[in-house]
Image (tube, rainbow, N blue to C red; front, side, top):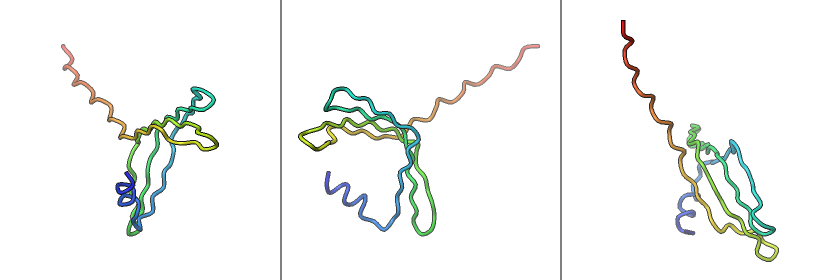
Length: 91
C-alpha cells in the first residue's frame, strides 16, 4: 500500500480534491462512517484536468487518542443508463 501511494503521489503534479457532498454518521462513540462524492483536479504543464464525480466511503475508528481509517473505498460514479429509444408516434 505504501509503495502504491508513494508512486501515485510522488510527482510534481498539483492535485486538489473538491468535495461535492459529504456526510458523517456516528455508529458509536468510537466509530464513524463517512460517505460522499468528490472531484479531483490535477494541474500538469499548466493544463487542468478533472476526474469524477467519484464516490467514497470510509469507516474511522478511535483507538486511544487517535482516529484511524479502518475501511476505505473510492470508485468512479457510474454513468446513468442511456435513455431507451422512443417508438415512432402512430398516425
